Image 1 (cartoon, rainbow over the protein chains, first blue to last red):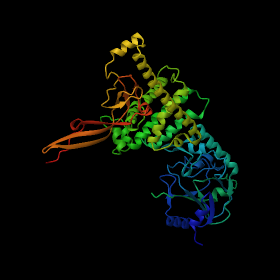
Image 2: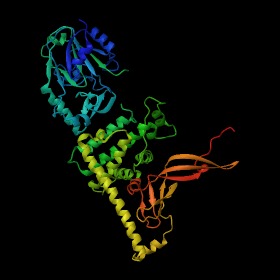
Image 3: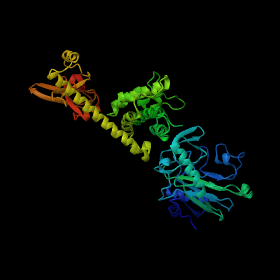
Image 4: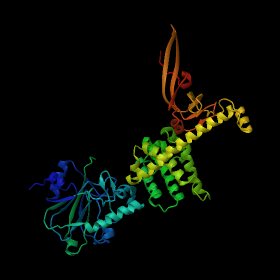
Length: 216
Length: 305
């Protein structure tokens, strides 16, 4: 069956949606849609193979360097980039037993502290690049507590809001081979649960590709 | 790293500083005003840099900052921006009715608070200071092609609007006060009830003593006494070259200038309105026409004829 990326993107437009396919099929379908791949580091390929790593084995300045095999906090990918990616696709060839947790911004709810999200200022640190930004703007969300430090009370309130969201996160389990999880990176946060099954340390591989809709 | 002249980066830093000023209501007014005054300077930089980064670059002999701002030099060259007083002077010329006087007073209070032993930011009470601050900040936000909500968030817009309304009322009160006092003074003089030393000063006055000496002036009816007063301005908003044939081989040529009115004085009742806001509030024309010799304004183009 051919991957129908437009249908998958439509299903994931407000949060995320699972599909079936391979990295090859995904990249080809994305290219047909005019999506542009985004590397997370200037020296990296846009396609990353994410494997559980201890703090000692992790690349410096990464989520694993801070959280190791433990649970990652909810975050958007590429929060350290000037223009965060719009879509994140996670792809597995084989099932594994460590879920990816997901959380979507509530809709139609008065519980979202919009003024804190839109006006609280964070300092983003990524190697030599540092800049000020907010966790929300006209394009959507940007948040990663590992690289974003709150600078004022509104930002502290925004960080607390995302921290409290951990309790409402849902799990996506990787039970099927050739599975794709497409995440709207400007409307939903995600993170890997702690590695409870030690077999996953050697076998869990999640391929990640980030895409922007902006032509470069 | 954000480029030091990036208007968006300057704007978000101004937003951060205003968050510091407005976040914590338990913060002392002096500290709130300090953060706000720092934000005002950043807003001035953002507004000018949006037009061109060159407008905020220090023009040294080597021109490092200018070259970097123009994109002619890249790499690890230090960019230095001009001082607050220069920024505010430029904003006053570029973004009317931004007041150089008001903004420099804010910057001066900030410098005294930061660098001297002055224990308080300003002797002006908070209820009077914030309306004056927001009147200037609002003009710069507009010059950045943004709205107040972009700077302070929708939950704080109402608070800022209260200050802006108060500032408008303050200007109206000041205008009424100045006009009423001018009428009163003229009435006392005409009825012979003026105190002796005041009458002596009145008698010593010479026409034009209250003029600001700006480059251009026109005549306008005084809002206090109805006499012909002097409306002055520095900035030419439009210029038109007029030519008229006065005989078969003779032409008359002159310039018609439209000048922004920013200062009014009346020799009869001695009323002075010394800002664009006061001139505007008194219903005086925003601009006036001036006729000058062509040579005073420009030299005609070479025509090769």
